[in-house]
Amino acid sequence: MKKHPASPVWPDGPCPCGRSDAATGRPLSGAACCGRYIGHFADVPAPDAESLMRSRYTAFVREDVDYLLHTWHADTRPPTLTCEAGVRWLGLEVRDVHVADACHAEVEFVARSRRQGRASRLHERSRFVREPDAQGVWRWSYVDGELS
Image 1 (cartoon, rainbow, N blue to C red):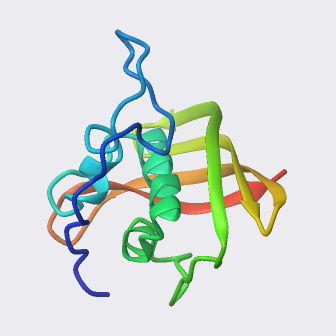
Image 2 (image 1 turned 120 degrees about the horizontal axis):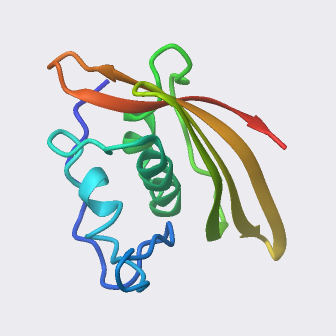
């Protein structure tokens, strides 16, 4: 797999994942939120499973297939991935985060989308693991998920 390139400049506005600043309650910008993980993948790994899940949602919104593949665990990662044409992602709701230990976590979420005027909801409990990469950097990766 090729090295993940830096993503293009992030537009102004709230991050697609919907995360808010804990102190102010205001939505975080894309650059201050998921953009720091997606745009600086080699240097800034997501610090926890929820942040990785949110950044993967944002990568789906931005159709950043490279980031999605790089953050998918090697044991379950597909050889290729394409984004479904015409999908408009509408929002993300994180329902639960369960941290089993320092290297295993689950995140339950609902992602809403629309395609050709038809609304859809993806409700999943995703499993994540944290392991060192080839350079010794500890990274979270998506393993798999159970749909509801």
